[in-house]
Image 1 (cartoon, rainbow, N blue to C red):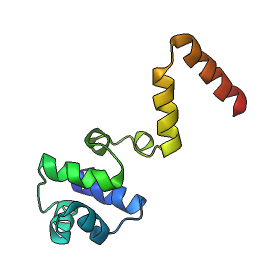
Image 2 (image 1 turned 120 degrees about the vertical axis):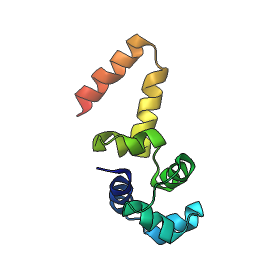
Image 3 (image 1 turned 30 degrees about the horizontal axis):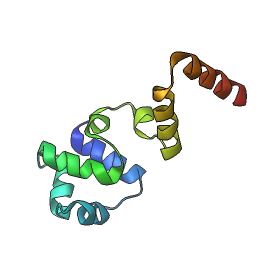
Image 4 (image 1 turned 120 degrees about the horizontal axis):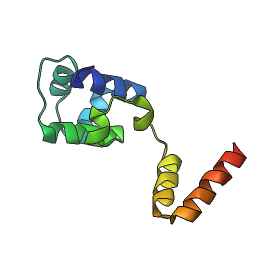
Length: 101
């Protein structure tokens, strides 16, 4: 999947219109459409600005692993908390989550 197709996929999966992305980023609708259609090559700055309203990072934009892209805010918080824990408490958290599912 090329970057334009990826942007369109992510935008539509979040139910965002080109108009809304344009208003949030200051990038014209024509430019966004051109990128999605593969008619324009975006700069890194443009991609960074487009990623923000999609709620993703540039790394996630280039990562085609869909599962990694669509983390809810609670999932992100859980991962942040897990990463702050010492190993023994991280294992305890994993065991707890396994028991709860």
